[in-house]
Amino acid sequence: MSATDENECLVEARDVVLSFGRTPALQGASLAVAAGEIMAIMGPSGSGKTTLLHCLAGILTPQAGEIHFDGRRVDTMGETERSTLRRDRFGFVFQFGQLVPELTAEENVALPLLLGGARRTAALKEAGTWFERLGLDGLEKRRSGELSGGQAQRVALARGLVSRPEILFADEPTGSLDSLTGEHVMDLLVTAAREQGTTVIVVTHEPRVAAYAGREVIVRDGKVSSFSAMRMDS
Amino acid sequence: MSVPLTLLGLLEREPSHGYDLKRDYDAFFGRGKPLSFGQVYGTLGRLARAGKVVVGESEAGAGPDRKRYVITQQGATEFEAWLTEPVEAEPHLQTVLFAKVVLALMLGRDAEHYLDAQRAAHLQRMRELTETKREGSLVDALLADHGLFHLESDLRWIDLTAARLDALAEEVRA
Image (cartoon, rainbow over all chains, first blue to last red; front, top):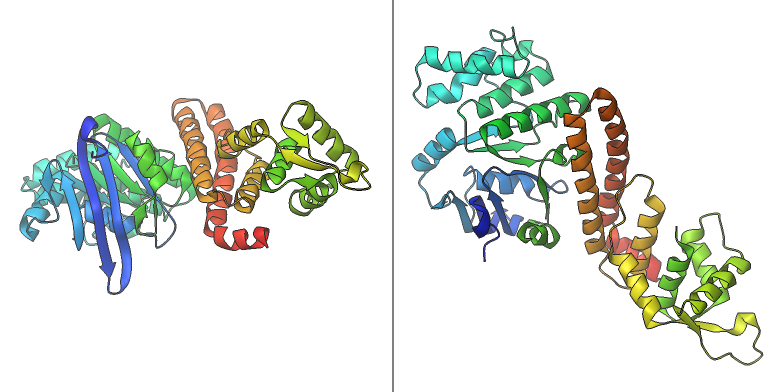
C-alpha cells in the first residue's frame, strides 16, 4: 500500500532511479508527501536529496520509477505539459535566490504571474502585497545587486509563493544566509505556507532548518532511508 | 553514563570475570575515570541480587577474581530495552550516545538504526523547541535557542558517527 493513500497524497516518488553517466544518484527512492504537509529532505552531501527534489518537481526525468502529482504521472508528461505544471502549480526557491538581475525586486516577484498571462498592472499589484508581508517595504524598485542576501532570499520566497502554488520546492533556501537571517526566512516561509495551505518540500542539511518542517526523511545512497520511510507509514 | 547497564552490555558479549569487565570498561568507557574494583564488584553484586546476572562456576583457586559472571534473560532484556530506546533528547548526552554506539557495534547490533532513531528523537525535540520559539516571547526564544544549538551539536556528532560506523566497528571488535 502506498504511504499516503489514506491521507491525500499530493506528490509521490515510487522507486525512482536516476544516474548521471555512471554515477548513480537515486537508486529506488520512494517518498510520499501529503497535501498541506511541510517536509524536510535531509541527508549527507551527494546523497541524492536535491536530485530527488528535482524529480518530484518535474525538472529531471527518472530513468526508472514513477513520479505522481495530484493523481497524474509527471515523469511521462511531455515537456510542454510539464512546463505548464511547473509554472501554474509549483513554486520554487533556490539556495542563491537566482533573481533576474535586469528586473527590479517587484518585477522578479511578479514574474510567475506575468508568465502565467496576468496583466502587468495586476501582477505588480499582487507582487506588492508580498513586500509588506515579508518585511520588504521600500525595496520594490531595487535590483538584486542592491539587496542584501537576506532581502534577496525573501524576494525569491515571495516569487515562489506569489502565484499561490499548491506545492513549494525549496532547495537549501537558507544555505547562503547567516543563521539568524536563515531562521527569519524559514519562519516567513512556514507562516506563509500555512496561511495559504501550500505544501512545502525543503531540502536542507541543517537540522535547525529541518526543525521548521512537520516531518523529515533522510536520503542516503540514493534511497529514502528505511527508518524514515517506516515513520512515514506510521 | 550508566555503569550497571554498560557492564550488562559487556556481559551480553560473553561471560566475564570482574577483572576483565573493569579492563574493558576502562579501555572503552573510562576515559580517564577508571572504575575501582569496589565499584565493579559492588555493581555486580547488586545486579546479581536483582537477578540480572548470575555467578558462574568458580574456577580452581577461586577468589573473588576467579568468578565468572553471566547475564540472565532478565538482564539481557533490560539491556536490550536500554540499547534500542532513543535517549530523551536533551543536551549533554554525548557519553550515553557514545556508550550505546560502541556497545551496539561490539555486539554486532544495528548501530545505524539506533542512530537513526536517535536522530528522529532529537529532531522531534528540535521541532517542539522551534514551535515554542515561533509562538513565544523573546525570552522563550532565547531559552529554546540554547537547547536547539546543543541538540544540533549532538546531531552533527550523530551524522559524523553514522558516516564512520564501518571503521568504528572494526576498531571496537579488534
